[in-house]
Length: 381
Image (tube, rainbow, N blue to C red):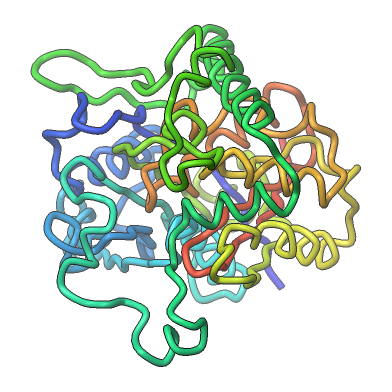
């Protein structure tokens, strides 16, 4: 079987809700990173076999196959196709997985994977305004219990015994690590500025410097009166996009490109759809088993910070080194633009691996409905 390698990865800065990126259509934001990827690598867009594009809320600005429309917005030739993938929050991580699988199988030679979400323009939960997504059979199976991610995060906190102090300490740490990464220029290489009203926007907008457990303690719980989850220890509603170029080692050589990392292994798994957000735990075990690696072999982990109890429960179950978990901060600090987050996390994972010379990195995302992706990549340069 052929290999699959990542040649380059780019992302926009992450805009906060109703912030700097809120006036930009999802197709234009997507087209911006596609164009930047082509410019940086020097590839001819006409040679791209397909664009696999993650997006969660596929209505309004993000309807009608946003993956295909992104190609047109980038100014790429009309013959280049595009498809939109929805695996909830893991949509663009699934796009990366699917792109790698297609390259390894010999069906594609050069493919772009990524995703977008403009949550300012297409609000979270907007798809529920026209119907019931779960349907009567599923609701009956689970005794009509509410499928709510916030309540799922509360159930995780209860099951693993995390109190308000613990989750708030984790959230404050996310902000501190993200601030340090921004100040150190860790993201500079893969971040492409977006021009808005004549000004270049080039920094993640959601960061709240000086966040502490004491400041977070003042916030009221969002889902239960006596709960631990609130706006400060949950991921931020955001806007953003990211894209990766994936090919084979041989094709990269032909194009004069130097691969950054090799796609090593991928796995998906399901879990309790009511607690919903524990999927990264079995997905991690599954991908490690498939890769023939142990948790100690992995130099850095990106576990999406949908809510603070998610990575904390993952850490408790896997026994991973806490110092290797989300060392650059995460979605609590800088935001979670749903369909773009998987690809955005991959750019962060690559940045950490390259900066520290780490051979293996593992990324995993909890997803609505109780599924999760887990992906291992191997540094080549």
